Amino acid sequence: MRHKNISLHASGDLFIVNTCCKLAAWLFPEFKYKWLADELKLYLPVDKEINIEGKNADKIRELYKRDPNIIVIFNFYFVY
Image 1 (cartoon, rainbow, N blue to C red):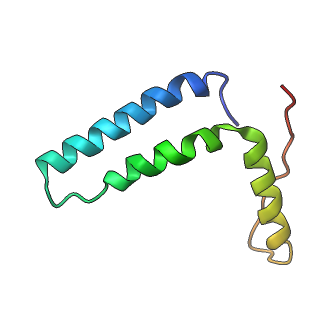
Image 2: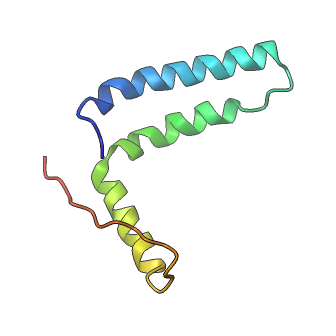
């Protein structure tokens, strides 16, 4: 389930995570999580695309279809 303003908030979320990671690294030199902001910047545009997410879920559902412990919901694709 996604809210309609996810794209609007995503850039702000990215800014906050990036700023917090930089601040934490400055305050605590042993903090080694700057990669988190880099990963978010790389994958957030893909994660916002709901049809890509749906195809990923379809793939996982097919891979684990014989495992009764894993349930992947069915997706409804949106046409924009």
